[in-house]
Image 1 (cartoon, rainbow over the protein chains, first blue to last red):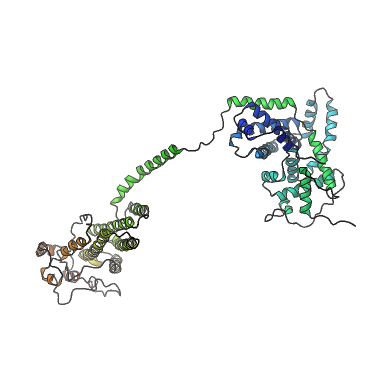
Image 2 (image 1 turned 60 degrees about the vertical axis):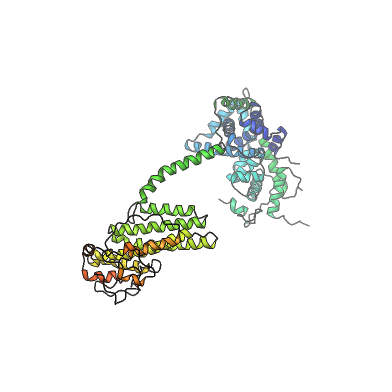
Length: 221
Length: 357
């Protein structure tokens, strides 16, 4: 069956413990490497899916990880909460980048060609670009989702976080996150031409989190 | 037969379980969602971080570790730190409060430091409220301070502040009385404080009477504003219940005593309650002719008649009003009927008593 949440499992496989966390706080190389190995791939996927630029995603990954390690002494949570905390930093860095980008617009085509030229060394850049366009069909579909849906899906599937962890990062209820991921995947399925799940567009329905706004209400801007 | 569509919340939960890798029955509703999730997951899996880039990142982090100073972590204060901080705060407070307290000690109503003086009194009272007996003592001390203020204001002829000062004295005496009663009811009798308070009441009544004498000596409402004069009269009348006026049968103040005597601060009240009342009463009994009406004979030193020159010096205003003042009726002058309820000293001297002049 489907086996999502891979990064969480990877972390558990790496066996990141409280002792590792304490050692990473002291910048012990072995512990820092273990933390990096556990989370950097997920961070890179998150950034890559968000910005569609390998070099930029690599830079953002490095920057986020460096700031995370430098801020690690301030992290007081358990080692299980480290992932959520790292992605909070990543999300913050991503918003910072977008803010800067909105001030100085870069031509996306030129960026893509540069990336294609630089990527994979001796491989034909044109071929790489075509491959990338084809491979990013899902990514293009992802960009058609609402920002909330896209962010939930990326944190959930690229970051390997659980719905409650995503809810905490986004400041939403777990029910709202579940509704967003449902709608996001439904939209993705429609865009990719998969069998439509006949997503209901009816009136708001109660959220699984009692006492909070309904999922649809929270999703509405 | 078509199965009913699951409720949206149930669908959300099932999809969430599916994404978490928990076993879920793949229904028609879930199948396309699972396919989309698979496609997205497969796409994300192709995004691999270059090992060289990963090494650069790690080098960057570990290089920084040699130069970057550890983020400061707030140290938990130990016992010594707490004590040191407490001493520093206490020292700073003392540096500010002690001079201010000393400066405000002599402040009078209407002066800039007076509110500070009252605030310090409240702090002192609050600091002893854990003990009823100590609170009674502190409140009695405050009442004594109010009495001193009334006397000083009288001596300095700051008449416009006197109505408030008399009212404050009355309130302070009431508060002290309540505190003494509370202490006694809680098994902490304070006989010395109670005796002091009794003496304060008597002296308070005398001080209020002296206020009226001074007001009249200053010309009554002729030289003092009518408003101030009436306010003083009202305050004096209102304070009668708490600060009983001197008993004219026991002590008849003479015009000579109406002169503003030096308001030297009273010595600390004696501990013996029986001794507290006796000094104040004979001090007013200056007329030997009245002594038979008192229950106890006046002390020998008070039997001397007042020097005549003091009588004359204390009558700068209309001399016709002086007898009324000394007889105790303070509202019967200036040719105006006394307002209802403002009659001072109901136990005025009997008509047969000749005016002291």
